[in-house]
Image 1 (cartoon, helix red, strand yellow):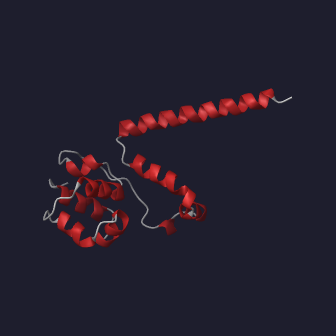
Image 2: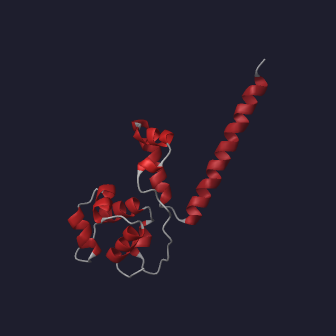
Image 3: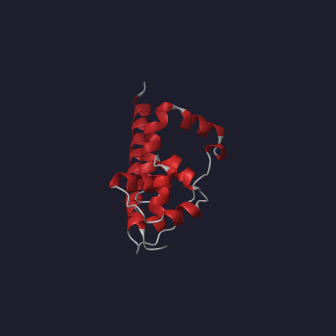
Length: 139
């Protein structure tokens, strides 16, 4: 990747075959502002930098550090590519906390993600044990 923040945003956006308008919709940042950032005419605020990273599905340091090599994970281009049950889940307002958590988890480093997977697995095992205990206590 290139050295500047803007060129890294552009490279990741293009690797996903997204237009600037697509990134604008996903990040909530205007298309002209994204264009200015990509051309290094403007430098984003911390809030905008975080929104761009979240929309692109990469940790913020990937956009900021020119020495970080990062392979962008595959992302679906459209909700229509998801199974119908997943589309219904996404459209349900009660799904928002889960979707926000998934978005935050997508930007974790590999070490942080690995730690989180271990914690989730331990919690799942604990729940199974608790359910098993309840079943054994029934008269």
